[in-house]
Length: 324
Image 1 (spheres, helix red, strand yellow):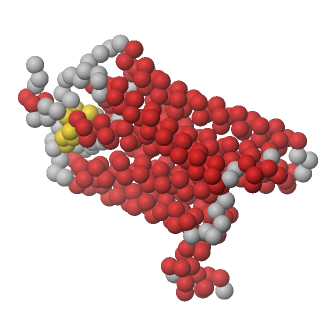
Image 2 (cartoon, one colour):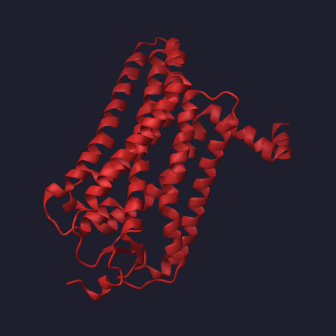
Image 3 (cartoon, one colour):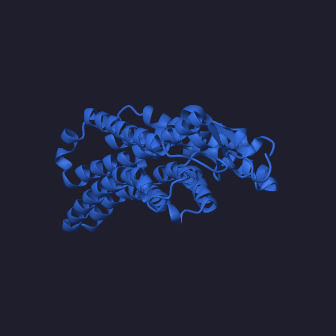
């Protein structure tokens, strides 16, 4: 029989969030709000900067899509978490209710955006491969039409895997308190509530990890293997450094994204600790999207120039003063 606490949410779950830390809730709200606003501002600035450019190189088109994904990625999770932190504390061992359908939709969108980003990072690695290994053919190979097709394929790939994974997870029987020790409907938290103990129930997650993590990572490794071989053949150290510098931003973002995703999801269910997973999820849903615009704006000369042009339109007097 269901407990009385379950009877209050017969068709949904309870998101515990950070309700066991009532004294820290105001501080967490302010910190999370500041990081969220900074993330939105940084990614929006990159989007506006790229759109305002008269000629947009393919890499910047991919970068604008990455910023759009990060915007949606944070909007799926953070506003709900801010609303829960702003609401009165539900008390220890309780949480804010979320419907079964709302939880499934949040998880599906989160996985779809994360999967699209995995595929997009592989497409960006291919762009770097063609630019460095076949520079004379770059304009003929990496065309705007190819970029559009790759961008669409990334989104459709993430959407397809997310729908299959969501259907598989929400067909599992859930029992117990229905209390998710998390601030959003993450896969690991939902699997922790599943009544089954069979490893067969983790096969959908394993399959999704193979498609979203292993396949793109192999493509990225193959691209950078070819790039490393090409760079080793360059006689000019300056040319080698210049070519390698175009890859550093992409490599930094790739390590951040794949490192967090691998740590979180490529583990058996028995090794998951709900509270530890919640802490790590707080980092990769708030901090890493904030770092991406910083990494690209600091390392990419075209992005820095585009951002200065946008700032010049918004604050012409300040820009002229800086240029004198």
